[in-house]
Length: 181
Ligand SMILES: [Ca+2]
Ligand SMILES: [Ca+2]
Image 1 (cartoon, rainbow, N blue to C red):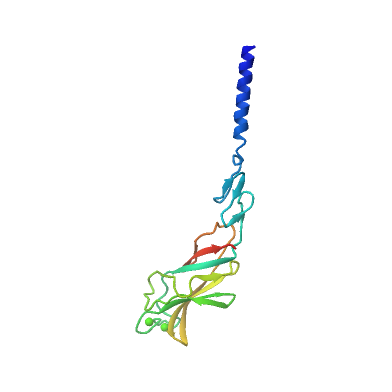
Image 2 (image 1 turned 135 degrees about the horizontal axis):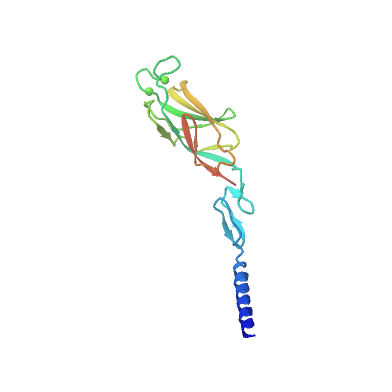
């Protein structure tokens, strides 16, 4: 009889302990993408939603904060230097759907071979996340005369990539931030 009582006490103690541990509402909740469980519910970072933060939110805007432009050819389509007596005066133009969005700062007499970063002028520039951005690398000559050095299309946002802060193209990279509102 005494042994039976002991066994019963043990069983109840175990049951109580198990009951307590299953009272933690976050025990079986695993939140994705850096979400955290609060009282059994996932609180998600701004880029994600859903019961376990598994659903990606399409950003309302993507902001280009800066652009890194690698080296480019030292001559124009005529085989001549960009400027006859000096290096090109380089700035960027931004377009989406052929609509002009703004320009970067300009770097005067820029060595074509070097890699440089633009973060001034109209930057940060606001993009529609779902349309390609065209970035033109330009040589400024006079108010009515400028030469296109090269251009590139980049996708501001691609679903399922976990919101990279840098989007890398062939001849340039853009540093971006995402807006959800
Ligand atoms: Ca020129
Ligand atoms: Ca020049």
